[in-house]
Amino acid sequence: MQLNLPAYEVKIRENGKKGKEIFDTFRKKYVRLTPEEWVRQHFLHYLCNEKGFPASLISVEKSLKINGRARRFDAVVHRNDGSPFLLIEFKSPDVGLNQHVLDQVSAYNLAIHADYLIISNGLLHYCCKMDYPNHRYTFLKDIPDFSDL
Image (tube, rainbow, N blue to C red; front, side, top):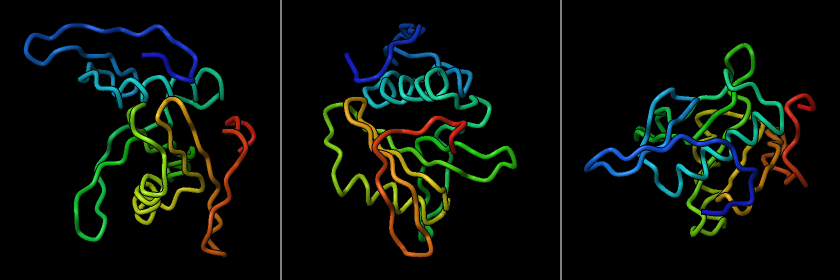
């Protein structure tokens, strides 16, 4: 599946009834290969290889509670002190990025309090910087390099 992201060397295997799996270098295990997972893996490699984000600061699919309900975020980039810095929500390429998706990542951010939010379906990518004092966010023209943040 062609994305608007650089290619990287993927490891895919067939796992019987489970079907195809892709090796997730961030979780250090094979995971089910879904269209959303294809986007996640390519985007996270893009952040590391093109934008200079340290892989050691990236967490993938961790649980959090929002209004007493268990949820899972797609990916978070942490600062060196472990605090959340950037929250990312991935969608399959056939899912449009709209206000609903932005609302979803914003709801997750109520629990996380990241400085930046990104949504991507592998074809389109949007990044915004949070402005907590003014209760809003500002969309950026591009995803910044890690060294610029």
